[in-house]
Length: 156
Image (tube, rainbow, N blue to C red; front, side, top):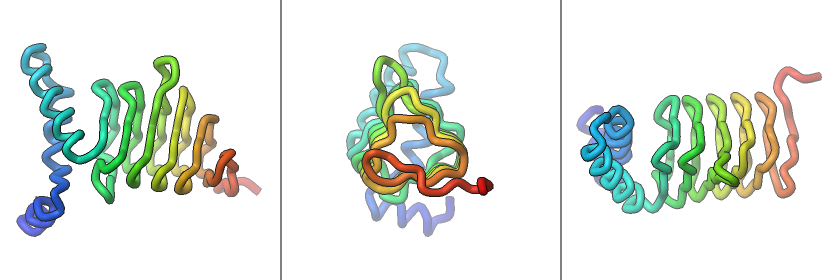
């Protein structure tokens, strides 16, 4: 991280780079006492940023959070693919211990809700405010409530 990026990150008050470093460190930690301390610090940091990232959530890469964790809730059972962009006030929630599996290169708009044991394909775009509770195929765009798929890439 360059000095300019570090100063910008600090001035916004987000400090997301530090959060993700701490999160990865906790995921690699094997010693239970240290892992518990790291879990406490990760949870405090997420709460400070106004969001929640569950203890068992899996991230294939560091997601892009343009507005930080502000209002973002990610279930402990969720799986988020690489290169995802998640805007503010998004809920990726669970029902019955099952949470969404989000593919790579997805965009999840502000205020969207993904709930249950659904599978969201690669390259999917979910519009702001959409509530998604069914599977979404690769390359689709989902809008409104009830969710409607309005485009699919590569389909005639």
